[in-house]
Image 1 (tube, rainbow, N blue to C red):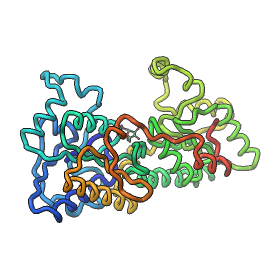
Image 2: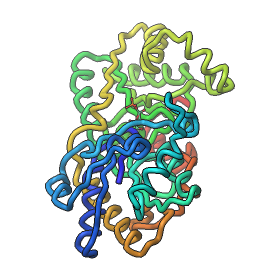
Image 3: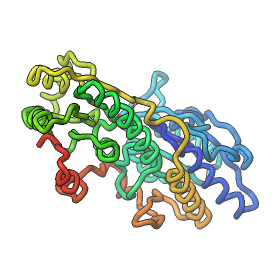
Image 4: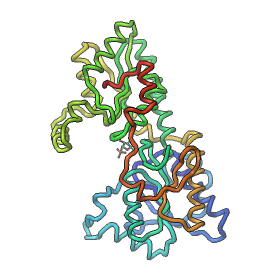
Length: 352
Ligand code: F6P
């Protein structure tokens, strides 16, 4: 078992679900917990774990196994000792006589998991990420806990923004997709929500702020995704965008947007970045239930020797989704979806 990529809430709850599901149904289960994600599998760093190691961790954030990012594109690039990382993982798998790898991770993790499947290893995966951007599941665990934290941040900003009559930006995690910003923005009553999927026109953002001022509203709150992008930048090629970013003097997108708003309106703009707090702390009850159900369903697949699947949650039911359908696909916010239309109907601006 291993947890890979950025951590999130309910990783421990999910592993507990898998282990409880196996140990109460099989007499003889050996669990190898790999340290720090794929790194542990590549370099054979692991601990033998018993079912008691998974007791009392339902509510604990982070991951008892540790995690690391091992970029997919570097998997076939030899390390400093000339080791091909995929070969390293296969070596560990066969050396230990493993029956199945249980891999908990997000998008990058799933690309590697699918590669291991193609290489002939038995793999079952679980969808974790605060970004909720994995294909094949309506919901990833970690997402709802992160929404709660980002919403709390926006709630707290509301009172101070109202007192001072200021424009505030709350920068929410999500470089490629805006689910977290969209949900926390709506839940927190943000007036403007900027997402990677809906390039913004700064003039429209400024118009929305000025319209609120004219209507006698003393403050404006923007929920801005880390990966929010202007219409102008969205028209650039990837290479041109990268070049532009290198010369960018702002620490993040929020600072650039704040500078443009200040220039256009003359009002002061404050920025709050909850950052990694969004991935921290205890999982919320929803995520505990989701992770437990997904873990338990994964145990069933393993008992049935059905490998090569991610366990997703689709329309309230756990579902096995072939790994090749999940790997390399992002679940993005559809600008034409009803949630966006409903948000716009109540006056939220997306700057488009
Ligand atoms: O993938 C989850 C995530 O938290 C993203 O929302 C965020 O952009 C990124 O990870 C941050 O990564 P790191 O922890 O490596 O800085």
